[in-house]
Image (tube, rainbow, N blue to C red; front, side, top):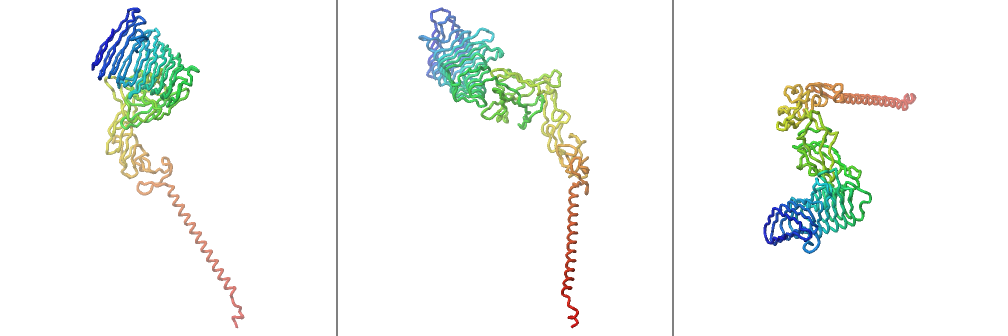
Length: 576
């Protein structure tokens, strides 16, 4: 079969089915797409079944604007060496956009011989060039060989070269060069995982004489990530690759002397581990905060979560035996919703504006679908998250409470789901008994949740907004200062009791003693004592001064008497 499409603007092919059964006749299927215009090619399915080793399928694309292959099913050898079959199975030359949704490989498939990807501009929805998904029901060990692949995935989008999902296979890559691959999660160039049976891992990886340059991933393994014990990487290089953890490689299992350290150069682990990790990753709940959707603020909770409220659950990570709970703008994780395994309706994927500056790993959770089975509270269970390996997220400390707070919120029943949610009281509404009530502006300046602020000149003895429990301080309005408290908390300093008419004589509440003066007014006793002391000191000082002056006077008189005696004339002289 030889088909050639040239110069057509749009080519739509439902299915390409190529079946070879002719022994050694060297049959091959060739489909060539050439265009000098902006041709778009849509192929729904390529179903290739080969039963003899010398038959192959060749696809060649040249100057095509858009290539979209939804599914490629391969049973046999892809590409071979010799004559026409020397061309690669899929060759892209100056293709602006292409998207191969999936390749379902058989038990023996090879993708080899000069596969070249240059100047690729991927579709906005495309995140991987080759997504190979193994049949998880087939226990035969698949064999996939990739050689002489040269891919420069420089793109405005994040495009990964290979994502291989399965539990039993042998992967071999040799004499290849992959650069500028980017992943939104793991393995910027190559990622190996098993989402079908996570606890059953039976795949081998052998990579040799290959180079990985400037590969990037968001979380783990800038170039490669995997969860296999049987990995051999030799005569290869990892340069300028980066990720949060494991700038070059992230693996679940590690063996001593597994990698030659000389193959790593200038790789970056923004949070930790520039080249490769040695221990499995650990993850735990660090703290939980309740988010106020109206104000955008959040506060740390002690233990209980309530249905209907929104929470941000912060995680810490254990990397090679060390726990990390501090993150910055370079070591950014953010919302982990995209890597949850089958997330429930309790998780929120959208990003709140006030959380954009939060760098730590977190999940936004809101209990919309929780079963208590008659229990007063249940443990917080968040399900499973995929960090190459699947981790269970749960806590026996944090609890989901079967009910709402009596103060500040009310319970709202959802008739369709036969469940309830808790809701905080809105502005100028308050709850002290499980029901939100409207505050009267005559008495209150502000109300919300379980907070109500009385105006000055009013007093109450309990948390209530009922007018029958609120009193006007008629004897001395200035003694009642208002506020969100009750009883003495609403009184001016020194005042206590109903409507703040008494003085704290014994200093029980205000710590200092106060005495009544004037009309329902209180003054601190210490100030009276202080004034009395000052007067006493002044009087003593005045007495001492007067006594001093008296002594000076006596001394003066005595001096005058002595002078008169000394200068007294003799009687004889007087008589003469």
